[in-house]
Image (cartoon, rainbow, N blue to C red; front, side):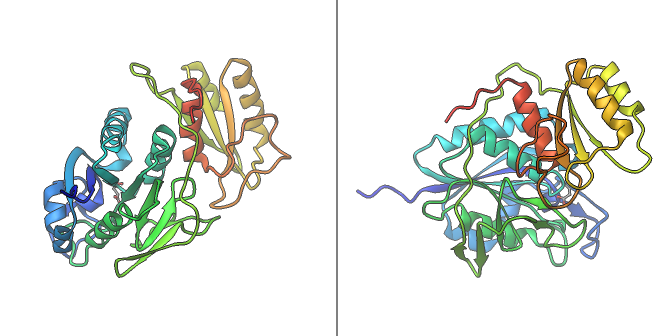
Length: 312
Ligand code: SIN
């Protein structure tokens, strides 16, 4: 007897891909996270050819992403990734914080199977919704032999958790990997792999531990230190500085950051530029997470503060 083909599990969390508007011509005045996962699947007849399982993990606008949903998502991913009959996972997610969730999952799971996030810029009720094609493509990517790690699949491109960034507020092709090429492309259901799948060390978020309080401060002209001082006075544990250019920081902020550090606040440096690394030179001894933008550095600093020992 042959064993049945492996499955793809779709974990739904909400977002515009599950959004609904009063009119099919309205692509902006909608509510995210309204349409259930079974209905999203039913809207794509081609998915009936795939062996799928679906689970509604949450139903949120990802701009409101919080600890409870992150915890639940990590736990459901861990559960399904352990199953021998599961080849890969697809996660439907809002576009707004997709890159942060992607990095969290890569670090928490470091999965040996593919975990493919997908999203849409237009609601499910739109005249020309982009979600159905993205969902079909993501399910296809989750079944690629040898695929592993966390990726995003949107508008026919597969971008690694390290590189993926939302770069446009309206276009359906809203994601890019500004400093890297895509991991793969999907054209008419065919996946062409272009470079290695993502991998990383695995971190942990111990049960019962609250996510550390980490804020992002942007350096800019006419910067003032008051905001940093207020955060420090109210117990912030970490600060990520989105510096100008190659991580330069306004002198008014530098003093406040040094004072914050003396009071035990962990400081990390990133760039507010849309692309490019922070190279040695302006770091003032602060940690830099290579290849990570400010929002992903914030996730990484949170994991560091949780005291996560890397586990291979
Ligand atoms: C969200 O991030 O949940 C809303 C916006 C979107 O998905 O495009």
